[in-house]
Each structure stands twice: as C-alpha cells, then as structure tokens.
Image (cartoon, rainbow, N blue to C red):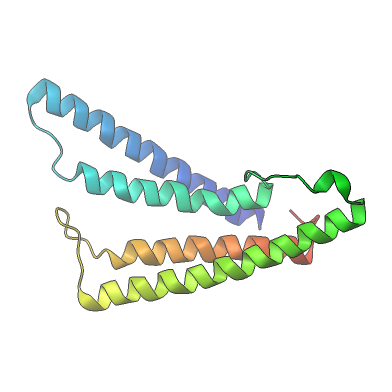
Length: 151
C-alpha cells in the first residue's frame, strides 16, 4: 500500500511542478515576448487534476486530512477506535460510489467524442484518471477500516 502512496505522491509532485512551470513560462512569454502559451489553461487544468486527485491516496494513508474532534475527548479509547473505523468504512463506500460516477462520466465523454478546446485531447480520460485516483483512495480507507494500524 505504501508503494501506491509513493507513486501517487510522485505523480502529484510532478503534476504540481509541471503546472507551476507552465504558469511561469506563460507569464514570461506573454509579457516579455507577447507570445503566450495557447493551451496554458488546459495544461494547468490537467495539472490541477493530477495534483489534487493523486495526493488523495497518500493524504488518506497518512491521516493528513483536516478533521474536527469535538467528540473525541468525550469518548473512551475503544469508542474512539470504533468511531475511527466506522468513519473509514463510510468514507470508503462514498469514495467508491464517487469513483463509479466519475468512471461513468468519463466513458460518456469518450463515447460522445468530447475533446478539449485547444489541445483536442479526449476529456473523458481526465474523468477516468480522477475515477482511478478516487478508487485507490477508497481502497486506502478500506484498508484503514480492516487494519487500522496497517498504514
């Protein structure tokens, strides 16, 4: 599971670096040479998808999401552990449902032949990429439900 997280971290990092490079290069080309990158918005959009969605599995594995613990101090250790496990199961189920919806959307976009405006790449692939990342995140939460100390 940790190797999956390392890969997702790497892809998220590369996506963020690529997105920042495109923005910096676009600004320099636009203002220094009056030659902006025509597809800069589409490239940044793809970078956002890669950065956000590929960071989800690793953040979930590390427990790095924001959480509110109003009730935790009132519960015993056992009750807190049970609440934690139940929340991971609920999150896994919801993320699995979201992955299915994203996959359906991606397949619909591919079937319709939707492409991006400038680069003309099939937009359904971004939705399928998001579905894969969300499905992996659901798997991470399922592992945290089954074996809370595994990650």
